[in-house]
Length: 532
Image (cartoon, rainbow, N blue to C red):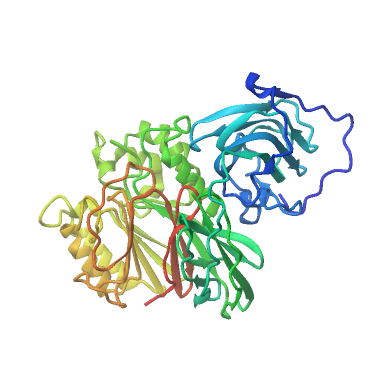
């Protein structure tokens, strides 16, 4: 759907929107004391049609920008965090051409359990001004039930009016200072800035490119990807606190990307993914991480094992994984974890579900290529069950595969990490694998197994910081219940007990990684590394 699609001039005999109020919502009316609660507040959405049509556009105060959900899918939602509990008396929705025939407005105190405030069962696409509401909560959610067009749902603006419970925290954070470019490639620009201060606490930063918010980062750094080569971009940053107060934008900095072909691609990656739960359970995380993958629109998806819990039967894959991450099956390059071996016949459910892509070269280990990258997918189950390797042929194959590689950049992924500050800790059984990676100057190693996120600086065979070694990332944060953390290694760059998906930005000569949390925030952003 084009972001410039225009609304038709007229419709014949448009139906009248019917608003059904809860009994408690009939008595109240908008008062002069009401204020606009929603503008500029943090937004989460079920989907977006594209990165330029994200949820923030629905509360930015402009009728020239909009949120649009994914095409041809019901239901869809947009949630606004008002910053503090508030009484809501009026909700105004300004529709683009792709409007809702049926929808509801909901409120919540915690952002998880919602109560319906009002429903519209015969929307006509005109501006809906829902007044006389008597709702209370911190979170306001629009839920589109039935689309009126073949497209998704598209809002120029969603405005909520009412009164906050108290004046509360009205002090905005300090304006971020020291914004500067770090590493720049033909398709990416790294940024860093000094942390802002606040009387209560800074919760995140909006990153603006050419005046438009392009991301929200939880830390004072960010790498913007997907840029055009040899092109200038102007960036700014503003800070937010928990009450929704927003600082002024920082002094701008202009960054020019390097000249080059601009060839690059995005990958999504995670391990330890599908618990036995579905979208009907609001706490089911693999539903949420799959939506992150969808929003990334990756060229390929990598899984680092334990794709399905607990015993990875084919019936479980079909009932759970397939309903979420299964949407990306045709672009997925999987490897098994230990849970795939717990089937009645080891790996049978895994191999039956993934079919040819489970063993594209006849084994559960294989290699594939994209751009100037060579990817090696390994079955580390072979190396963690005995003091000696159970299947030397995989090591022989690995050495031959690396020797035959002609690509300039190399990444490997397997389930059991050599280094980890998680519950399982360092895995001595995978020493030989790690030694081969360091000896062959592999650039990136991805693992799962520990249900957390940990990014290391480049390390050598002894686990010491060494620019010539691989960057190891443990990304077992795809949806399985999180594990407790142990003290971080000296080489740990970031360690988090959190869910999320790795976004890998690859070029012909470099790579950069980000962890995207289930709320859409960038929780960690690596430097841009040049391939060995």
